[in-house]
Amino acid sequence: MTVAIGAVVVLLSVVAGYMLHGGQVRVLVQPSEFLIIGGAGIGSLFIGTPPAVLRHLIRQLRSAQKPASVRADYLDLLTMLYGLLRHAQQAGVMALEQHAEAPEQSPILSVHSHFLHRESAVAFLCDTVRVMVMGGVSTHDLEGLMEEDLEVHHHELLKPSTTLAKVGDALPGLGIVAAVLGVVITMGAIDGSPAEIGHKVAAALVGTFLGVFLAYGFVQPLASSLEHRAGSETKYLECIKAGLLAAHKGLPPAIAVEFARRVLPEEVRPSFAETERACRETRNAAMAAAA
Image (cartoon, rainbow, N blue to C red; front, side, top):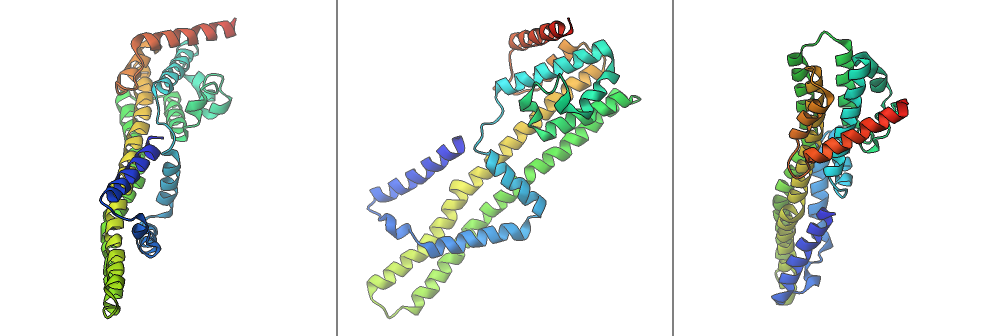
């Protein structure tokens, strides 16, 4: 939602300022300039981007309009971790295998739909639980394994935003290309009337304007937005990592969840009391179901 609001504010501010100086909006409407800059920008994106990254870019652009993870999402994650780790404490680590093999059918994981919708988080949790079930892995080695997984995942998440930023860097240059082509057209009509020449020069300058405007008003900020969302996604996985690692060290579920809570940024971190209350409700629900 903030992406759309920001785009509207940028567009209205520039157009309104232009009109206050007596500018005519219809002069800015140059379809040929849009075609040159937009088409060349999209073409360069296809030239320099592998298909897999393009698919990830499209997926991230679609999700850019959706709200990022909020405090309630992380509280849901913490309660899910508590329920899973408490089950392991009571029935043993081997009891987690069935939950890792079929998370959609797990009585613990299936009630947390927000978590299940995050394919990368589900895969990270289940793969780590499988390693824990196999046994024979020290805490240090398990931490290193999860760190490598997180590093690879974060690198993959950043590829779309990096690619989009490069396109943004190229747009001012493409705007100059459109402007030069406009000058070439103007030179071909140099014997025309001053009004005709002025119109063609204005159209050429619009190309430069569009390249810079699209780059710094839309594409670069959008790339920055995708980068921030990638960081948020990685933090979600780091929360899972902290909880599982603390449990692997032998700490009680409540303490392990506290380790997971502490890695979260303050703006989305549930308070200690909120987390304790939610975990207590999860424990009571589990005891009622067992009875």
